[in-house]
Image 1 (cartoon, rainbow, N blue to C red):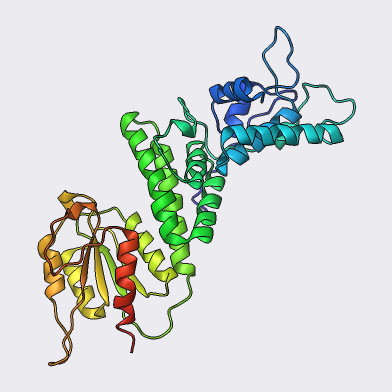
Image 2 (image 1 turned 120 degrees about the vertical axis):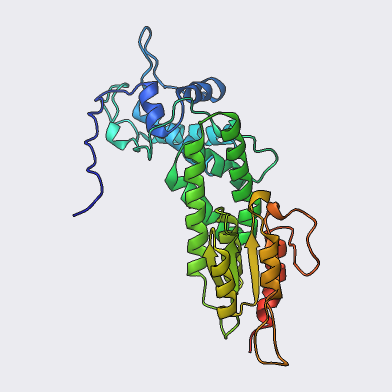
Length: 347
């Protein structure tokens, strides 16, 4: 038997034009956003009945769906609104949107997209996130995440990795968006927690897919071992490093988060990795004695004994580190350091 809960039947939808609140929930935006689009860009109901609550026709719904699609792809709102209006006018001219004899208020609510999650109270547009000067793909990803549009989030993450590679995708799109959501979360109480969870899950999914789908490296090079310190649970940066190395045909052994010291020492001695990357997000999780112990470990026959270089990755280590330990400045620097270390172990 399946453990999945039985889905509750969807509530009966109205047969005629939908209200602003209903449409906002279905599209995953706030009613304030719809009113703002109407006021700023003219994306309002084509027919407005006096003395009644505004109703949105099939033409209006299609126009707003196009607006949401374009903004989720990173198109600036003003440009997206112009494109959505032009498309709506073109369809109206062709007579393909509203069938002959249909009343302006009629709408087929089955055509409305079901939201992945209920729109949160106090919902805000992505422009409320402190993004700063970022790539267009970053803004599109933020808009999709704030709307809790899981499909758009995954599509955009996959596209940016495909088009720009793991390093650019991580440093210029994923990290800025995660930081912006984190800052908004910290300043807004418990709001935006669901946005951060959604975004983190899909980023992790994208990184693991890129790692696992990369071609297997040729030859018998020793792997690069990736691990978090015993008290560290932040694995996303290590997942990004693993995917970026796999993209460059470097074998990777990922141990993940919170690896006990004994287990880490045992894995290093069993595998004899080309290098070891240890991640620490904060000073409270740093373990410098453990890193020095791993770096000092030697194995092999006498006269040809070797060791694994150790990279201290993450902001927790600080800037001052022992000379025998490598300290990359970021993902790009870590990849540049590790690729030749791996190649040197190929027979």
